[in-house]
Length: 200
Image (cartoon, rainbow, N blue to C red):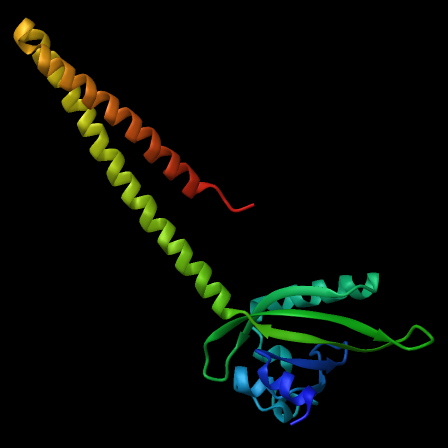
């Protein structure tokens, strides 16, 4: 196995070369399209059995057209994320980096680039978001408990005042309860606010 074949075999996606037409008619594709997405390359090359746009999530096709069109106008590369429907029916998030190839006269010959499966990245983000929601829920429970503790501290202070000198020890305890509740509430709110802030 040569170097190029070895690298392509490890790639979590595929390389392509296609026409700049309505269907992005594929001229060449590496075998990652079948290994990762379940479609034999020869079914898509030349639109033999299906077009490339037919395996994309239909709502993402207009985005593709817009991003590619703008990049070609500026003669720059593009990078974007969208979804491909696996041959078994489920959607897979991918990131594509591509660009146009022009001849000496400035005529566009074709498009080429790479399409990489990033579904596992989206799954990790979803898991992290779920963990954050659980933490936020637990923090809210703590805040509720601290509010109750503060209420108990207020009631304890009232009872201590009624007891006069005999309740002085109870008054100290009530004050400590209020201090603990207040400081703990500040910490819990800080955690809750940090959970709400988006990553920069």
